[in-house]
Image 1: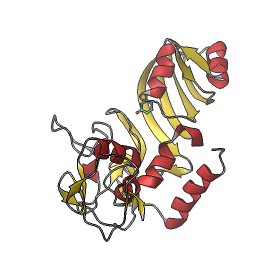
Image 2: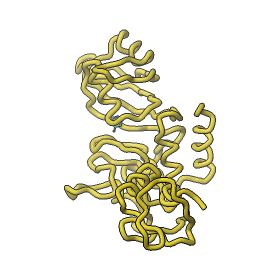
Image 3: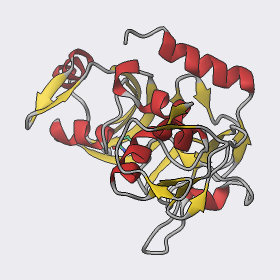
Length: 241
Ligand code: URA
């Protein structure tokens, strides 16, 4: 017997946290009865429905997409825009691990393994994410120090990041840098740059942990190898709880 939210996450339909919300919202039934409190245990021989749909134990699958610009990181969009799911093989039921902005490209993991997704996203594991940033303006030495030390802006705390300046275009007052962050707040890179007074012109996530999209065209999707999945999980296991 397992906790209901764990079984729901294992079925691949959503994360464990989202499953808890669904339970509390009364959307989950076990053997025909609504369960709306956390802590109930069940197993896959029970009939478990979420929003009226029966769930089952799915094979766990893991993909990496080279997300193109111009699509939203959701499974469905109420404004009918393109979503990242348009780039995943049609028969695969997965959800994105975290989120990239509409105009951001690069590494996006997708899976039906809720426990894995939670590990990849949880801030306490500090998984490195590297972004190629095209910036309007030139970071000063003081700005670079701030990014490396971590700083607070408008009550929001940004942990120390790695900065590698790749290119400076003095005539056009632009620069390119690699920024590695270890947390994953919404719009984090743009927020950090805006806090320092700069505008991000272009953003591409080049690495998530060690996973990259080198050699993959925008919109191309590939299965992650079991070894890669184990290595990603191991990266979280080396971190303090
Ligand atoms: N930071 C951002 O500002 N946007 C993204 O899409 C990812 C990180």
